[in-house]
Length: 111
Image (cartoon, rainbow, N blue to C red; front, side):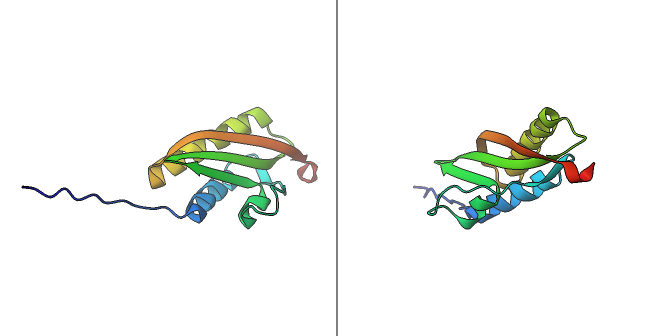
């Protein structure tokens, strides 16, 4: 009789935050994350414009960003969604169920 061995890998949520943050900031047209508050009981990293929720094996992401003035905000948002989705899927193999990009402001200092 063969014994079936099951292995599991757990990803610390801070890894997901790091992947999403670095990927977003590396996207052309993104100036910075927007400071938002998600309440006193949330992780400190969520107050830096990034919120990630994990339900079962699916990831739900909200990104609050400020774009550069000369960029098309819709294209920047779509690019961020695609790049973050690919980065998380490729690096940790988890399914990204939803990525919401909230454009909270436009950086006029770059103009």
